[in-house]
Image 1 (cartoon, helix red, strand yellow):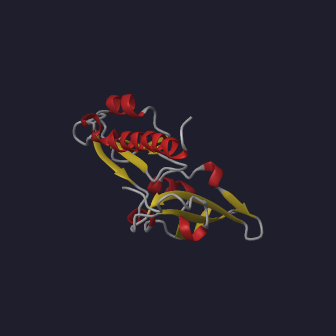
Image 2 (cartoon, helix red, strand yellow):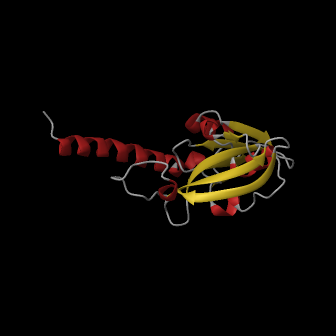
Image 3 (cartoon, one colour):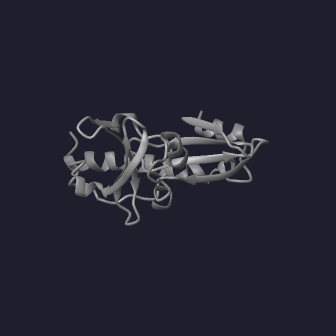
Length: 180
């Protein structure tokens, strides 16, 4: 029979293998801007969760890693289907672009879709709240919220906080940091 320590080591090895595999996905040359194509992206990443056509031609493909991941990847393809840009949009620079009176579609085109299970309606305030998990500038798991007027579906405000302040999870034995 395995001891608690042996079980923990086995599980840790599996966890870190998955972690490294997830980090390695973008080292593949088929997913590098200037080298990748729509076919190679879809072969390695599968179909995007969302996609839209850009006004200048080409498309943006969206790959969220939620609900517990820290990234939403936007992969931009030119009109010929070549990968021209790959970026994580769950960061302070992209959150700063969310402004009062933006529509839901404008928010999604800046930071991707929220996880549906984390969408909440507060009737007393007639407010709809969308939430994303991300890794903040201090390398800690955090949550970013966009608060909409539920009638107009326009942004009222935003809010961000590290998970440790929100008591979102009770994983006291795990480190309170994340990787980029």
